[in-house]
Structure formats: C-alpha cells, structure tokens
Length: 305
Image (cartoon, rainbow, N blue to C red; front, side, top):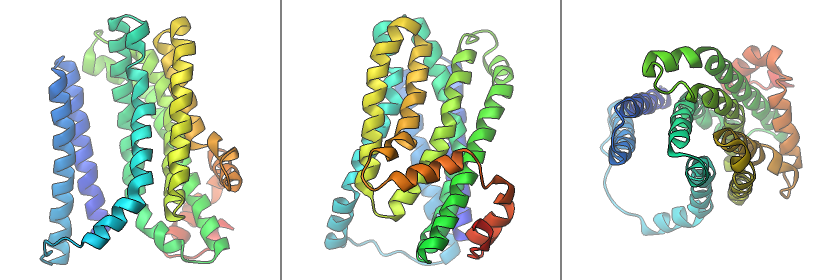
C-alpha cells in the first residue's frame, strides 16, 4: 500500500507538470517559466511522496548524516549519474541541433511535438515505480525464476509501449486540434513519428531496471553513451536532407540502440539482447495476465515458464 500511494503521488506530480508545460506552450511563455515548472513539479512530487510515507508509517524520520553511507552512495551512484547525463544528451540534442540547420519555425514545431510525445512516458514510469520493489524481491529467487519474471516484465512494458504508440497515432491529431487549433498543425506529423520511439523507451525502462538490480551500472552508462553518439551523428547526416523529420528518425534510432541494439555488442549482454527482443515481439503476451498476477504479485513462477 505504501509503494502504491507513493507511486500515485509521483504520477500526480508528473501529470500536473505535463499539463502546466502544455499550457505554457500554448501561451508561448518564456523559457524560464518552463524551467520553473520542471523544478516545481519535481519538488511537489518529492514532497507528496515524503508526506505519504510519513503518514502511512507514522514515523518521525531523524535528520542526520551518515558520511560513510553518503560516500558509498556517491561512489556506487556515479555510473548512474553519468547515465542520466547521457540520457539528457541523447533525448534533448534533437531539440537543439535542428536549430542549427533549419528555420526557427520548424524547430518550434519539432519542440512542441517532442514535448507532447514525452507525455507518453508518464504511464510506463508509473508502472515501473509500482513494480520495481517487487522485481528487487523477485531477483533473490533462483536464476530460472528471476529470468521468467523479468521476461514477464519486459513483455508488459512492450505492451504498454505499443498501446501508447497506438493511442498517439489515433488520438494525436485530435488532441493537437483541440489544444492548439491550427496553430501547430505541422507538429502533428512530427509527433506521430516521435511517438514511435516510446516503444523503445518502455522496453528501455525495463532493461534499465534489470541492469540496476544486477548492479551493472556501467552497462547503463555505456548504452546511453552509444545512443547519444548515434543521435548526434545521424542528426548531422539527416537534418540537412530531411529537416525536422530527420531529427525525429535519428532520435528513434538512438532510442533503439540505447534500449536494445547496444546489448549485442556490450560485454555479457547478449542474453539480455534476446530477452528484450522476446519482449518486443510479445511472445509471452497470451500468458501475460496470469503470469503477471502469479509472478509479480504472489511470487509464483509457474506462469512464465
């Protein structure tokens, strides 16, 4: 119950932040306001999570610093910090480089499409936050059981990704017309292209959780670095020829490499490559409901074998 309530508070903060961002886009607000909304959204989500935890546990958390633990967290979290930095690069560079090669108007259309497409990440992140503690517990089972439960999780996230893409392709044009009227009509095609990348984002969240549980933090950094390098290279190659659509396809290719393709070349990750492929193909989808209930909720491993 505690993890579910904390997840709901984070989801609420993310949704409010996303809606505020859309409003600022519609109002053509100053860039500093977008930065302020992002900071405020993170602060609100953190505050609500803390309030939910303390209200449920009814414990007063003593404020003290354990320097040895702090240093251990910094040392162990350094690869994750680098991974986060490279994620920012390869998820944002496509919104910077078009401005160097195309008109500001086209850059504006692309930025709006990218920001709306990113709203599709809210649901998979909420699912990840709710399931991750159970995954950590499941990883302490036998290797066969853990691999089966991980496959269930990969399939679930792939299904979420496909549903997100289908919803965006079908409802995206209507949403743009309702929110922006004809003002950002050229962004619709860009949005429908960018939303395809959410499939790889969802499966990337799943593989990232798998690597985190396995303490393979440097693999997380390496895969996102490869994605960033590919994104920059493809932007230089595609934007002069295809404009903003070139940036969109470069971003999708970078998502695929970072979330799947890199595992074929990174050391010790070939089995993960085929596990992700199995998830993308949804080979376990017919058994997903029963497997999800039995493996990720009660810990029974029979459903994914």
